[in-house]
Image (cartoon, rainbow, N blue to C red; front, side, top):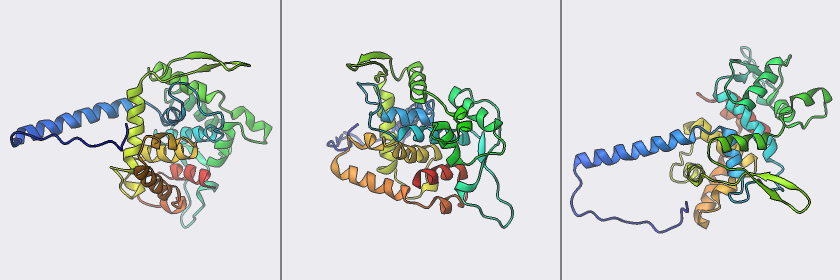
Length: 281
C-alpha cells in the first residue's frame, strides 16, 4: 500500500511478442475490472466510513465530529447518482444559488438500501421541498425545529458498519472501555480496504487529471466527502512525505473550486456540487 517503496525492474530475456503484449493488457484489464466490481458494491457512505474506521479497533475517532454530517452528504449524493433526486430547475433567464435550490424527487423507486430508502421516503413526504443544507441538518438531527427531528436517520454509523459486516469487510466484537461496553467492527477484509485507499491515492497522484469534470463522479464525491468527514488523511497516511504533500495540494485545489461555477459546466451533477457547497460554507 505504501507509495514510497523502491520500484522493482524486471528485465526480460527476449523481446515481447505482440500476442504477449495483448495478453498482458487483457490480464491487467481483467484484474482491474474484478477490483472495480468489488469496489462498486460499496456505497459512497460505506466507503467514507471504511476510511474512517480504525482497522484493528473497529471504531471511528472519538474526536471526529465531522463524519456524522459527512455521511448524510454521502446519502444525498448517492441518491442523486442513482437517479432518485435532483435540484429543482431554474426558470428561463433565472439563476438561483445552489444552496437556495430545493431537492425534488426524480424517481421514487426504492433502491434496496435501507438508509437510502428511508431518506428518500422523508423527502417524498415533505412539502414544500427543502434545500440540500436543510436535508443534511435534518438527517443529522442537527436542527432547532422540533417538527423536523422525525427526519433524523439514527445510528447511521452502526447501520453502515453492519452492512459492511454482511458484505464480509468487517466483523463484530464487544470491547470494554472501563465504564461501558461498546460494539466495535474491526476490519477482516484488508484487500477491500487496501483497494479503497489505493483508489483514493491514485486519483490525486498517478491518475490525476487536473479537471474535476474528467473525474468519475463517484470518485470525486468520495474525495470531497472524505475530506468533509475528516477521514481523508487516513488514506494518505502510508504515503512518503513528498507524495503526501502533493496529494494534499491537489485535494486543496479541488476543495477550493467554486461550486457555483463548476455546477454550470457540461455534464456536471448540480446536486453533487450543491452538497460540496454546503460543506464549503
